[in-house]
Length: 561
Image 1 (cartoon, rainbow, N blue to C red):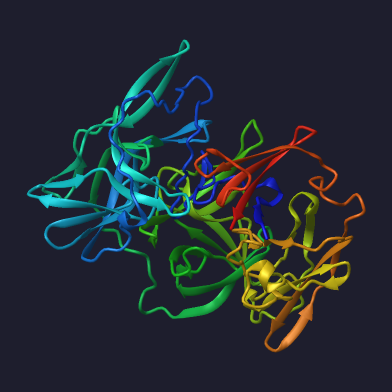
Image 2: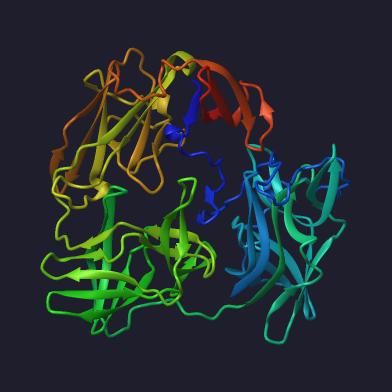
């Protein structure tokens, strides 16, 4: 059976393995690398970039998965990495860096071998490059394969690229192509700082495709590394930690989790504010009044290492530009994130909901591991309760075209009383024509058939999905003749089962999504993840662009086995 992965509600457009990036609103994602090859222009009056096959390129080294270094042994030294550079995103703009500081580390192995993690830290791909210490130099042979996609048989090499100007049909284009350099050299100063030699905006450290040497649109210069000596925050030994003292609750994302707490006079400590970094401690200062307290979290606290990246607390304002696009703008360094602690209500709420607390990998740019917004901390002794109703049911009917449909819905992990539920004990059931739908093991790639779907569950075939960072779920439907589709939450906590109402969508009424069977397909084009057009019966992962007769279109990510 053909399986496809709809980008839910046509809302997610990032390719697999790449980060969805807004210039001023970026989430750090491990191995965030895009194989985009079709970037032609940059908007406004800035430069235009294109791949030009007429440029003589250095011979490409065709890599493999075995060439990528993920695990090394030796003495680890944390390093802060400073660089300038840019990344071309989606042909729309260039994200530029100037003297930006990131986190990384190096590992000193045997025989003077040295391994550098995420050598271009603004493009964290989670691998090492290998160098050799020679006196006061570190010499890295290039090209080296730093990323490989086995399904696509494509990867990226670390290279040095030279800048070119190209005139074609009266237009001036700008491009980079791999130079003939075979080494990248770092000089080591007496204070332990490494500085890349001979690198500048026209001669950049970059990634290029293994198979043909084409520049991947990532580059950096002014690259230097120096020992990082900041200490991760922790609770003083004389303070007692109260586990699960607070519960992080966010109505917007529809769930929450426990937060540990320690209190000592005018200082308090939180552990678990970040879902992505649950072990991280955040320190705050407190000013007490009779009925409430004001809790202040300072910025630039080093909270730990996330996948080799150093993370600090930052505050940012949520703004909207002229195109109605939301973005974050960092607050001044002396701004303190404020929570108001109401003793009677036993909760902490945000002083200014328009400001978010970021777990950020940069002190200068918005590049976050986690974002905390529109939340409150509540005291909750028990996680029992009746689950709130599912909502926002949407049904995408593709039975005629592809033999499948998709139900998208929101399953909040909140009780009818507004408290947080334990997601380990929360399930949901899909109803087709009023009857519980059993997900067949073969159709869904499961070990056994399933009726009650665990809240956090996703399967390898990607026919059961949980959207990252929210309570949005999606389930593929392979049943024909569905006239009503429904969802019910089931909660099994402490031996007691409670259920929400069955929320039903009548597919024969006007409440059906606009993206439904009444839209007629005009044509379909398929592309691999590198942007090359392929046939519709291609195997593996590819991107399908469906255009309708009314001029609208959506993107579908397909996996064909």
